[in-house]
Structure formats: C-alpha cells, structure tokens
Amino acid sequence: MDITLDQTCVTSEDVVARIIEDELIIVPLVSGIGDMDDELYTMNETGRAIWSRLTGEKTLRGIANDLAEEFSAPQEVIEKDLLGLITELVRRKMVVVQ
Image 1 (tube, one colour):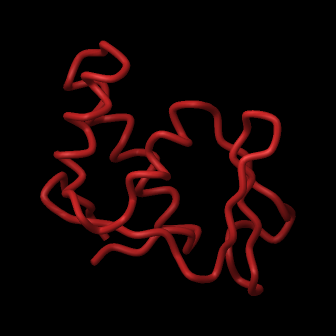
Image 2: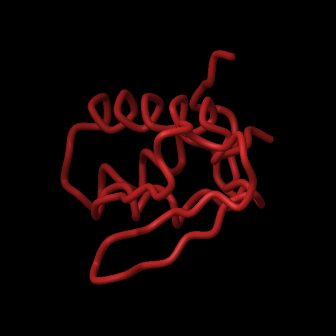
C-alpha cells in the first residue's frame, strides 16, 4: 500500500501506548502485531510527537507541517521521514490508514 501525505491515520486499537521515563512504549495486545521477536516498541521524542498526532483529524501533510514548525526542520525531510515511519507502522499493523 502506498501511503500519501493526503491520507489520515489513527493508531491501532490492538496496541497500548504509554510514556515511561520520556520514552513512548507501545505494547501489542494481539498476536500478529509487529515482528514475532519483538514484544515492546519504543519511540523517541520525534516518534512520540508523530504518534500523538495520529488521531485521524489531520492529514499526514498537516502533521508534517506541524512537525516542521515544532522541530525547525526542512519540510521535505520531515515529509520523507514521516511517510517512512507511517509505512512501517502500517506494515506492522500498529497504525491504520483511514
């Protein structure tokens, strides 16, 4: 599936996410989520900023705009990194495209 900046995404109901000691910890609730060898997933500050915005209210382009402003980073770099992460999270069934 090709994901575009014009799509919206939400976090899967099959995972639980909590912030513990400044890291976002994502725990799959059902089998078949993520990789078989991994049980927990962690995300850094940027990952947390993305995860918290995956509410289905903004397109990925809107999220990229917010992140570029928040992190004072080039729009093109943010868009590329965002699409890469979202593609991986969708593949792992941790995020759903609406």
